[in-house]
Image (cartoon, rainbow, N blue to C red; front, side):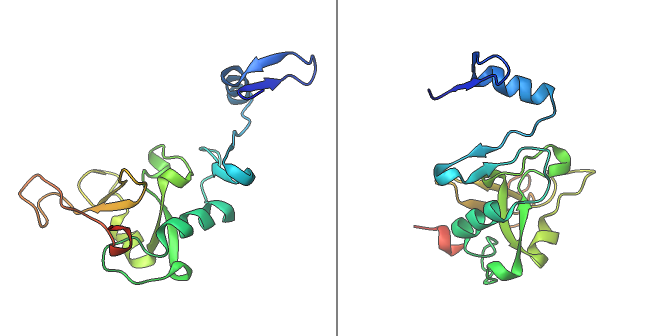
Length: 152
């Protein structure tokens, strides 16, 4: 039955919500699986992206997602869109491929995380890069751009 779990010691069935709460209380890492048992989210316990998650990000981004960059996956790292240090999860929806240069460029300043470059996913799940406020846009606004691979 989808959405339930079974307690091994009693055989009692519990809801997915109850199982998640018990796992959290016991410091057990919940892993969200997609089709073919592919992990899509390894939560907060694991900072680095697993090889499977990296492969999923590579499949989506095909290399550095920064507009105009032609670096392939072998020259890229997976960056947390919302920094792991600020509470971001290690998941497909919070990862983006960036070459080393652009990865360092977009790393947030811990003193003012919103002042630098930002990354978000569009409605299709593809990365968009937001320049710092005022850079290529009116003061106080961001200019959002995408790599040509994501434009349809």
